[in-house]
Amino acid sequence: GAVVSQHPSRVICKSGTSVKIECRSLDFQATTMFWYRQFPKKSLMLMATSNEGSKATYEQGVEKDKFLINHASLTLSTLTVTSAHPEDSSFYICSARNSGDSPLHFGNGTRLTVT
Amino acid sequence: QKEVEQNSGPLSVPEGAIASLNCTYSDRGSQSFFWYRQYSGKSPELIMFIYSNGDKEDGRFTAQLNKASQYVSLLIRDSQPSDSATYLCAVNPLYNFNKFYFGSGTKLNVKP
Picture 1 (spheres, rainbow over the protein chains, first blue to last red):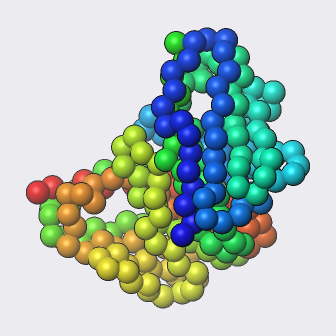
Picture 2 (cartoon, rainbow over the protein chains, first blue to last red; picture 1 turned 45 degrees about the horizontal axis):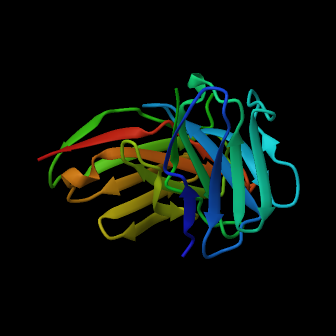
């Protein structure tokens, strides 16, 4: 149980375009999902906490107008990288937990390359 | 002071040996502790979680928690080359169940 599915796994886009990444909890409902970013050989960096039916909570230094998060249902959260730039190229990973004290389960991640 | 600290390694062990990975945390009120394995280019996958003081065993893996010392460890017995990865320690504080603090990870190399 507790499977998190993330799509796409890999995306290449041109500078100035927008990219949407989907994160789904397949066998549980997640009122909260988490979006992370990871640069090569670096640790996970929490970008934002996605809350179903309300606004996401962004970590300090993360531009909410650039990284749009929508948590429209209990099983789906999306991250849209708007007006992408090469420095946005990174590994984006979503995660969720199915109860208050359960572990975080991660999606397979999305490798974004902006050319 | 970071909330969760790990030695970045690399930790090198020969195949068949016991690998010992350590993690300390700063919030004494932390309740839940997790170990994740992350292969290069992949997302983290859950290895073990532990909530109570003492040892918890699952196959070749043993998680050890000492809340008095604010210390959690992961032992891997009979290490295999396929265990070579970065191991992340994560801590969930009592005051915010939606907050997870991750260590920067320890890179483990198991040499054949």
